[in-house]
Image (cartoon, rainbow over all chains, first blue to last red; front, side):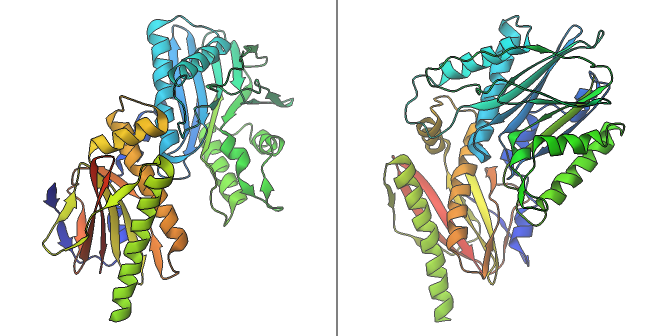
Length: 264
Length: 155
């Protein structure tokens, strides 16, 4: 037992407490890549990461191998500190894959993740945590701009001058501990050079608000992004933050939110 | 004056019950509340890892839950099945229990009180200052052979 502390005349203790850095928040953000790192591999990009609390269950991963770059967004089921622990488990599984295996295709990476998480929790009965996650992963060849996508209960939004395309992922999540088998297909994308792409956590589509107090649909969000297609990603970021805040209005943010926008 | 004392006791009981229920319902292992005591000397009673919640409104103060690594490691093993938790996991577990307790208390506190999102830290942060004129009520808890403290300080 240690005894310490200084006494001050502080009129609002909550304000005083907010001056201390929360260690879990620092840990959560430090495990994720910096937003600027995306600019090294994509011609333009942004990341919006707004956990509901101090920490969240949304994360993203960036990895390059020669001319190929991989970007994944994952939404761990649940929220708060337990989901934040799962973020590290997913990040560590991806690190293990990079260190020990040559896996090229986005679908194969999802399959690896699924098996890793499933194996880790296989014999753990009665745990209070959902180990599943929605994951979307993109592979980009930075020279040819060829691009592939695979999703586990996550879609990719493609905004092109001809319209909005929703690249649909598989329905099954990664990491489910049941007996069912999951397979994930890698989808080759077209018109990659003059499109904007967006990966979104499920929290975006759980936000309740708007004129009819409803959730945002993928099409509504896609149309919002399409109308700003020519705007730089940094501006799109602030516009998207404003759009989501306006949609939520006076209601409390009810889920973690992550949006990653990028151009090949 | 009597009503402030009653208010203090009622607030203490809310936190005690919330912590007790957390262990009982989520771990299915009962916790044992030891004899609470009023702490009069300066400084905080801290274990290794702490989740602290600020209280404001009609009265200013704080409540925190503090325990050593081993207790949080046991909870992580029980909840998540991780047998070798990292430092980050331990801090998150301290945050999780503080969050649940804060949420339960928030739902039951009167409109005169507001409580903050917990702040989690290891050891004693230099920046942490405690308000003057705060009485601290220390409730030692034993759970699964681990000792923890719930400490309530109100002006």
